[in-house]
Amino acid sequence: MELAPLVKLSDVIVDLVSSGSTLKANGLVAVAEVMDISARLIVNQAALKLKRAEIQPLLDSFGKAIKPD
Image (cartoon, rainbow, N blue to C red; front, top):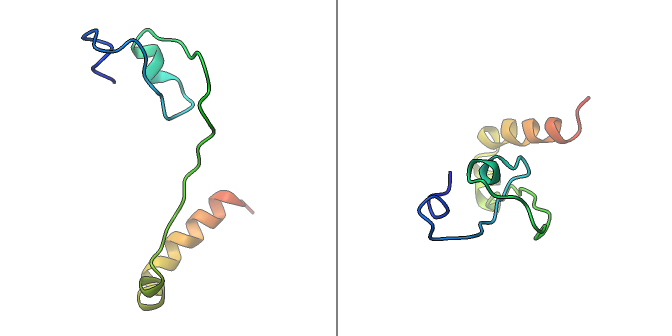
């Protein structure tokens, strides 16, 4: 929960998720959508080569979540 609206230091906040729970918890309403967001996984090329066995299960899990069977 954001502290600034509770102590009257802010009239608006930017909620980074689409659930709206932060807005509701602070008695605020959405007035504009700033932009769509997405997550990115960044893997260092050297780590991908040297630690492929440790990293691959994570990559596979993300792949399945994006494109379920």
